[in-house]
Image 1: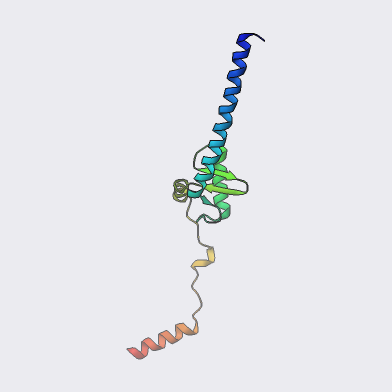
Image 2: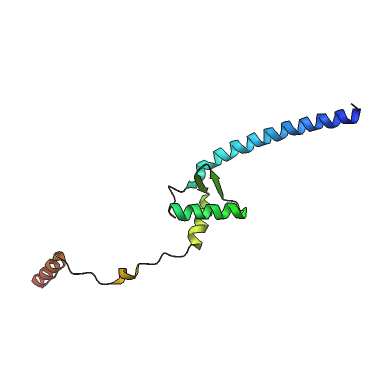
Length: 116
């Protein structure tokens, strides 16, 4: 083996060692960062909207979201941005209909009449 080949082999081994150390550091950093992140079970978006947001951000390569196993995480900043950009949920069509008067309503009305 020539001297140049030996030098290149030594540099390749050193690079592999550094790459392994960097991967370990990245995994360690990812684990510690998850404590600040919000998973789908604690999200005000709800499970489905939260997971959809995470998948959308991860697919686009944008920061603020990650998937670890079956858990989907958002940073608090990404969650706030998602809440701000999400359309407001609309009420059901029958939610605006007047409700039927109850016995309590009748009692309140009678008490108001007695009170004057």
